Image (cartoon, rainbow, N blue to C red; front, side):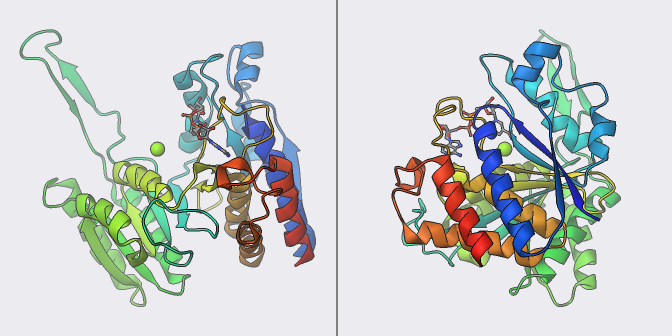
Length: 358
Ligand code: NAI
Ligand code: MG
């Protein structure tokens, strides 16, 4: 039975990098004998909004429920539609309604990319940030009182449910267990946040017992952030609440160079709902339409998708091809952000050829 993939390019460079991502996925599918069935959609884009007055058709949920995964480009074009309208009308709906409670971002230094951290080589930085994506600090419980007076105040509550915390920890432990180093680091702040964070720590402790082969440690979020920069080699799998994970999942990729190469996944691990795979970057209106966007973030997101679908070897082959092309350093192939003068297409095709050829 083929894996059914909904392809949603979205806006701007999303429409330029997604075809390269699909090209590479098709090459991997052919070589590893995987059946992928792609269907393209034009909604979740600002042009769709201008035509229909909404970001997506009313039946978007039922339509996308027919798919195993969503292969997404980027959404947003502030000159056409305000960002809060475009993002809340598409991506945020996916995350919530499809219960994509894991946000996963690899942090890996690739060859030929200069880390802003001094003296780092590929191999020195290679870990994952696993962010809880549905509750925690991003609840809408709270309120405002005495508006406009001296007594004015606001509150907003953090929500941690046992189910919500345990399911993200379980995912992170299983990921750590599948990796050679088998190490899990928990982001906490139980010295300052005295109710929710000690609860998080307690759940970590209990979960750790079930994974005796995984080494567990924890850091308070402040020193953990410092250690991302000072000692990125310490980490293997880092698990964090929604807010802490949001910050770490931008800081991590920032330590490994250009935004054009970073991938991300929003996952519903049980497969009850479709999971979504997209580059970290947005629609980049400043370079859109010129064919110079780096497609690696999109292509690497495709590798994450294959791994999620159980095709580890195929995902690894894509990552190897990306690294090989970057290490070769052919300027006529690479895009400008990684020191070349090639195009989205030259870079995408070079990676696809390597994936196809083995
Ligand atoms: P952006 O990520 O689109 O661009 C930031 C900078 O990085 C720009 O200078 C851009 O040229 C460069 N850049 C981004 N991707 C690149 C690539 N593949 N190759 C080479 N250079 C690249 O962020 P920005 O400008 O803040 O947002 C633009 C729009 O994208 C907004 O509407 C924003 O809301 C949306 N956005 C959407 C996201 C998503 O769909 N998940 C994520 C981030 C932003
Ligand atoms: Mg963010």
